Image (tube, rainbow, N blue to C red; front, side):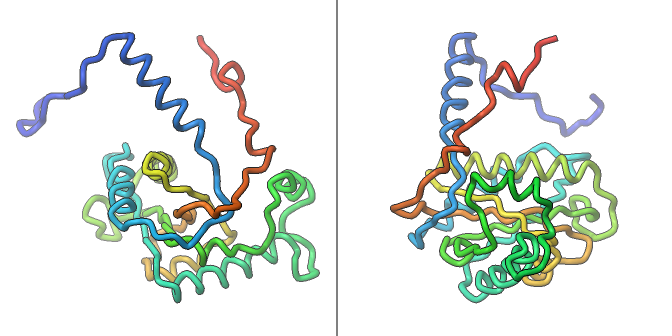
Length: 228
């Protein structure tokens, strides 16, 4: 490489046994992660959210443009505005206002075992809403003009790392994607070149929170991987 400021690639050397042990331990921890749909209003320190977002911000990205923004919402007024707008879209999605559901019968049937509906109280109850935006333009300087690359892939990786970091800190999460999500740009005051991707709800689970049996079904390694 001809970069005079480049640093040596540094990675902790591990024996095969230690590498296997660490990989299995992390896999077990992440496999214990569950989506939470019932939150308490118990506080989660801001420092936890900051550290998790900092970890997400280290994700690989196209041309290292880091095309993401995390709008962190704790204001009751703003959470209320998000809930009202999200539930309006959800009622159309589920057909809760007596109109034809925007989602087809097959989609609604797939959601049935999870027990979801148009009511989203967690958007107000949980202490934190992390609204994730994908920056279609901006580059590292966020100038609103420089083209970004592999935006969806980059933001998806960052969101996975964010959820993993929150799980490591003992914080329950839920990914919520009302459709359409354009209202989030307005509520969070973000520019037109940013696209809302999801809301990551973060907090402590309610004392009576449960996990649907359907959600416990995970594909085995033999089904999700092939070795060529």
